[in-house]
Amino acid sequence: MKKTRAVVQTGPRQLELRDLPIPEIDDDSGLLQVEACGICGSDAEQYDGVLPVPYPLIPGHEPLGVIAAIGDRAARRWGVEVGDRVAVEVLLPCGHCSLCRSGSYQLCRGDGRGLSGYSYLPLSREPGLWGAYADFMYLDPRSILHRVRKDVPAQTAVLFNPLGAGFRWAVELPGTGPGDSVMILGPGQRGLASVIAARAAGADTIIVTGLERDRTKLDLALEFGADHVINVESEDARRRVKEITDGRGVDVVVEVSSYATQPVAEALHYVAAGGRVILAGVKGFKHVPEFISDLIVVKEITLRGALGVTSRSYRSAINLIESGQLDLARMHTHDFGLEDAELAIKTLKGESDGECSVHSCLLPG
Image 1 (tube, rainbow, N blue to C red):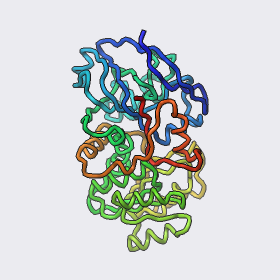
Image 2: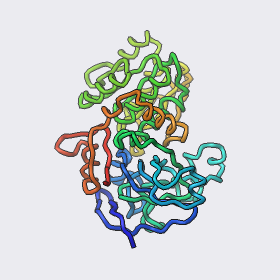
Image 3: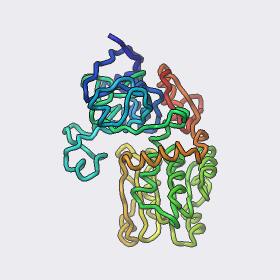
Image 4: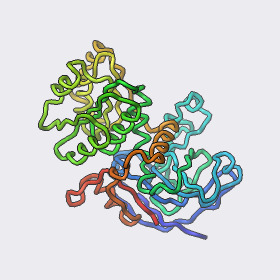
């Protein structure tokens, strides 16, 4: 039986490289030869044990690769064939629950076991290859695939996931359009993607906040279209927002910082009356001190959570990537092999000799 290398997580902060069997596929499934797998904050949370996942499992929820094998019905359903390059959505929706039928498939709990998706299913669930930290990954019949041109470098093409998040969180959910002012709290890869998406949607003014250690990322935000950046450690962010917006506040706030709770409370001060606040940065289920709910009432703020990415936003991201309009390679900073998966995560977290990545990926080849 043919085998694939795969990184297996056996517990919090425990990764090991194994050889696992490659399963046979049927008419409704497929096999992906992984070309690249993006790494984001969710990978770090899963590595640390913050996310409640069943061990052991194969991490990796941002797969880009080539169809290595495919069943006849699957080929017709997905509109792809062997040799096609595809981006794979993380979620595996059931397709028949009320949420899926209403179009909110990103919230699907159809199998009764919580969110179902790549990187979050155990090895014990056949056929086991449920993550992209591997040479090959199983393509379940419920998978959602998007074709991607082969002439785009893998390190750029794999940005489809963070850019998709930017389009959904900064544009699709708040309804951002021409003339809007947008404030993005956090200059990580999702924050930068939100800058790119908001600019593509015609936003008039874009503001990004960060810390002193984020200087490189804040500079990137300016390169990608932000009009103003604010170092919240050395500047009064509330005062700066009032100066920039003539005292009105911003139309849209997108909160994408990780773990920090203060930006959630601050967002209510930055947003204008009648404005929209999108919360997308997870906080480890911590309480938010100084969250003044009356501000939501008196300013009639629309407050909305954001979980995952939808096909519409993935497609917007891929179209932008393939257009070549932006030098997106500037966002990508690090490449790693499968054997260096732990180093890749620690680099993202800033635990590797002080070095920190903006966007990185595993390249199994």
